[in-house]
Image (tube, rainbow over all chains, first blue to last red; front, side, top):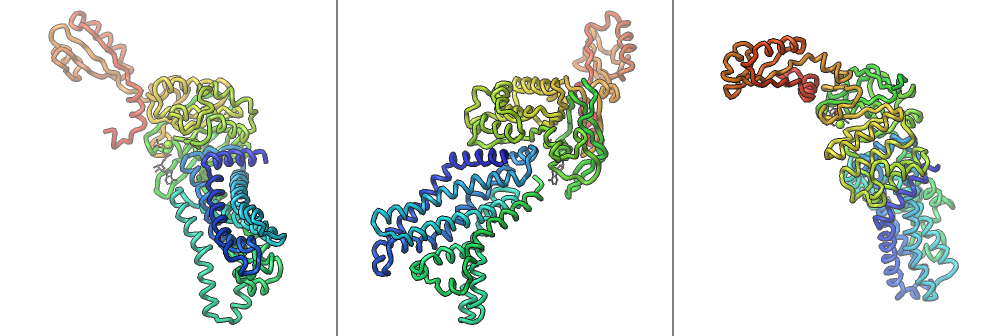
Length: 273
Length: 301
Ligand SMILES: Nc1ncnc2c1ncn2[C@@H]1O[C@H](COP(=O)(O)OP(=O)(O)OP(=O)(O)O)[C@@H](O)[C@H]1O
Ligand SMILES: [Mg+2]
């Protein structure tokens, strides 16, 4: 554990010196603020407070942006060290590969969590200053932040898997981009196509909700909207949330990071540096 | 020097898909021994080191470090490694990087400052590694070799790209390692790059071990001819008739003789008296010796 912490401390220092945490925080904050302010004009029309609306639009944003940030953060975690020749050296120290990976994971997850909490949290602060929050909407913001961190954890783990498979950082970057496209964009498009084709049949009612929950990015949408009836209305996902037992989306968000890390570990364990 | 065997390599064999690899390599390294591992580009020096350190699962043979399998926790604890052309993270300082290695090796943190001093990086310790010169990076790499008092140190081309002063400093560090009882295996491209102080020389050629022994032994076994250069007082023709070889500029003759005939030849030259005004004896250079062993038969002709 001291070894994992030593790796984590070093990796976190590198994140800070690369201004990674700062850039990610600012990026998320800019999006969060603009979405909040854009909602300010029509929150009355929906009959909900401003933060409810803001969380709904931030959820849509988070589904795309968080995976991207996580993949960007981690794609060179192993391939980059390997390119520098530092990986071979690190692996000759009496430390397991799992420890090395876990140390990096701790640091990256900490950086990502800080960026998400500050970046998305600022919407809550602004809405509160404008007097348009409620206990309900604050809770859903907290859920969005927690869910985003879990989603980020999964994509971080994926990025390690990609990095461990790649011989160069360029290859790792390409593979990470492809994964993002498939898991975050194409997956939804394919499901949407299937639903349209099925036209309200068995697939739409019984299979589709499960397939949606099985993808952690969509699980974040589901989990974020089940918090409040207002949320579900604002995002139009009431039908799906009713078709699933309670806690399925959360389970998906919790299981995937662990499974992803296990996968990355097994890939890394087999790598010949 | 103690006689404790640290590294034992027996019939090590590995073949890459490209066909290159290692061919039936066997040798041992004892505590405190400094061994130079020589060979051309692609001879298999780095591959051999990676196999010994457990980074490369090999096809056949046995390797043990203090009796432990390569790559096992005990073997890794006993071994230090300096990879070929290692680059550390440019955003870290030398001290931070070394501190990390110390914590991974379980070495006391106080040793970090001492080691930086030892390798001559004390002043630059808190500078980012991105600003280091190649020599400074190599020094940092050498500093981490000392962590945890390893039994075996594998240094892959530690002197390539270093200026003569830096190279000299590096050899001083290698000597320090050997003095504390570490067996040091050091890869290099040429004998001339290696300090003549190494205890043993191992030469690889296309993945095969073609020479293993002290420099003197290798020199003797190679039985390379010794060259004589004679300066004639008047006319070199007499000398040329007598010894053959080559005439240079009319007044000089250069010829070779086998090492065992060296004294007899000297006697003959002395008997010529005034006819010879000057004499030079050119023993085989380290480069000649290295070429003798390391070059393929086809290319050496
Ligand atoms: N991962 C690999 N896959 C395929 N072939 C490899 C691999 N690593 C090394 N080789 C081949 O094995 C041979 C020995 O390589 P190695 O790096 O050990 O040489 P070297 O003696 O260290 O050379 P240099 O002096 O250039 O560092 C080369 O022909 C090389 O192409
Ligand atoms: Mg090499």
